[in-house]
Amino acid sequence: MGAGLWSNTPVSPLETILRRIRERGPITAAEFMEVALYDPGHGYYARSAQRSGRGGDFFTSVDVGPLFGALIAVQLEEMWQRLGGGAFDLVEAGAGNGRLTTDILDAAAHDFPAFYASLAVTLVERSEPARAAQRLTLGPHASRLADSRVDLPSRVNGVILANELLDAFPVHVVAATQRGPCEIRVGERDGRLVEVEGELSAPARAELARLETPLPIGVRAELCPAAREWVRQAADALARGFLLFIDYGHEGRELHSGLHASGTLVAYRAHTAGAVGWLDDPGSNDLTAHVNLTAVRRAAEEAGLRTLGIVDQTYFLLALGLVERLETGDDRHAVSGRLAARTLIMPGGLGSTMKVMLFAREPAASPLRGLAGGRLT
Image (cartoon, rainbow, N blue to C red; front, side, top):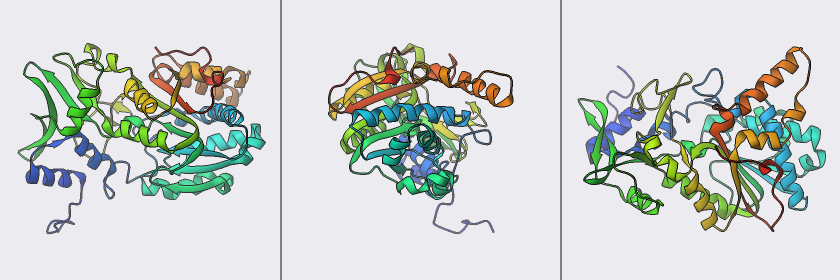
C-alpha cells in the first residue's frame, strides 16, 4: 500500500492543506504558500538545493553568469571603504546553495584582496539541502564562511544582501468589492483546492490600514506582512552598514491600481509564469508576488534606516562599471560576456524588472556608486 495511506502524518503539502481546511475551514493564501513553499519535508524550496537556472523553473541574475556577482562586489567594496575598512560582515539572506556569494568572493579575491581578507560571511537559508551544499559551492572560499543558519544573525556590521528573496514571502490576497474588502482564501470543493471569498484576517486588515490609499473597487492585491516584518528584523540586526535588496516590484500606488487589477500572485513552472494555477499541485511550483517597494521603504525607515535610493538594475550595474568589464573580439568568452551583460540590463527583462533598494545605518555620506544617475521605470 502507498506510504501514508494508514498514517495520521500528512505526506504532501496538499494533504497538509486539505487537513487544515477540513479542520478549520478555508485558510489564507499566506498559510497555503507557507506550506506549499516551505513545508520541511515536501515544500517546493525545502526539497532541492537549487531551484533556478536552466534545469529549474525560473532564471535569476545569478544564473546569467559571474558578472552579476562581480559587480555586486564592486558595490560592497565601496561600502567597506565607507565604514572605514576593518572587519566586514557579508550576510546573504535567501542564499540558496551560495552561488551569488561565491561569485562575489571570486571577484573580491581577484580585484580587492584587502576587502576579501576582511570578510566574514554568513549565509541565511531555510532549505536544508541548500545549506548542506553551501561549503561545496564556496569551494576555496569556504574558510570565509563564519556561519550557515536559518535566521538572520542578531548583529551585523557590514551588509545584509537579499537577491529575489522578498518576492517569495507568503502573501495575503484581498479584493475590493462593492460590499467592502474581502480576503481570498483557499477552500475545498470535491477534493480540489479553490478560491473562496471570506472575512479579512487580522494580518490582512492591519496591512490594509497601512496602505497610503484605499484599494479601488474591483482591484485584487497581495499584502505581505511577513516581508515587512523581515525587513524590520534585518534593520534591527544592522548595527552599522547597509541593506541591499534586489527584487521585482512596484511602488504601492502602482501595484495596487488598475494596472494590476488582477493581482500579481503567480505560479512558475518550467520557466513559464502562469503555466499552472497558483493552487495547482502545491509543492511542485514556485509561487511569487511582486514586491511593494513603498512598504519595504517604510519598514526600513520606521526601523531607523536611511533610504539611499531605489533604482532599476540596469542603472545600478552600469554605474558599477558593467560596460568597462566587457571584452572585445569574437572569441567565445568575449561573446558570452557581452550576451550576459545584455541579459542583465535589457529593458523589459531583468534590467528594468529588477529593482535595487539600498538602505543604510551609517554617517551621512555622498551617494554610493551604484546609485549614481539611476532611476525607477
